[in-house]
Length: 106
Image 1 (spheres, one colour):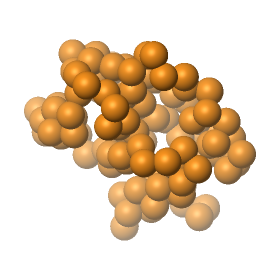
Image 2 (cartoon, rainbow, N blue to C red):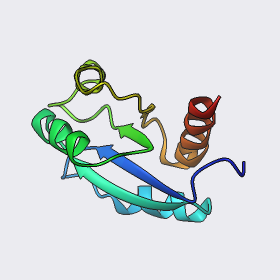
Image 3 (cartoon, rainbow, N blue to C red):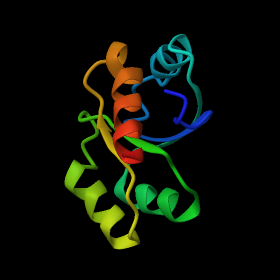
Image 4 (cartoon, rainbow, N blue to C red):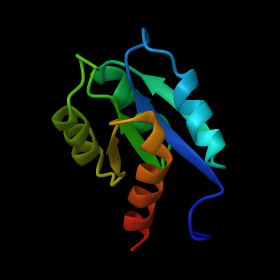
């Protein structure tokens, strides 16, 4: 998929009590160069989205303070269209991101 960005800028919404290392390792194993910004509360989601651009958002459903609806509301308010990938399994994350990015380009 040569149309995908060389460096994928990812906003990860995940509790700080859960390690980021497995995510980063899985993406590196898949050959993805990533820049990760991590937040765990809705005001931080807003702040991150206002400060910089992201290619994709990874939402861990174990994040109690942020729902998918909260993220969609933030994106709508800021008039941004960034694909949201629900973190189902670390092993399939790279494929899920590539699929989301490919759909965005179509």
